[in-house]
Image (cartoon, rainbow, N blue to C red; front, side):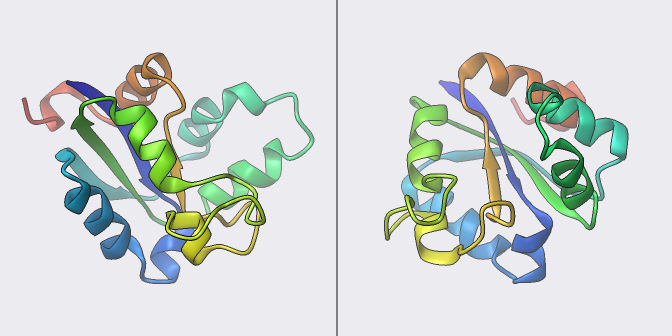
Length: 138
């Protein structure tokens, strides 16, 4: 079984789509192993998006993700990273196909509702950043 990190971003909570997003992962058969709602600190957000720190949009991204609460989650299943990334859809709204979370609900590049780990290695790093080991069900 593989684990992945999923986060409903502030716009997802503002639009009251957290339940719908969680439902989609549950319906697909993934197992929820951890869940909490937090307002990310700037330090956590900068660590989370460190790969983008040299890009011009980094500051806006950090400001956005710290602008309100997020729902941080750990999901488990066969090829969980690949499966959840497919369910989430492309980052660009014009590339996100109907049936995906972003394809059904987003129109903006930055306010795209949800983050999902892009590799098993990054999932481990992101899970460790957002959760203490004792917060994750075995």
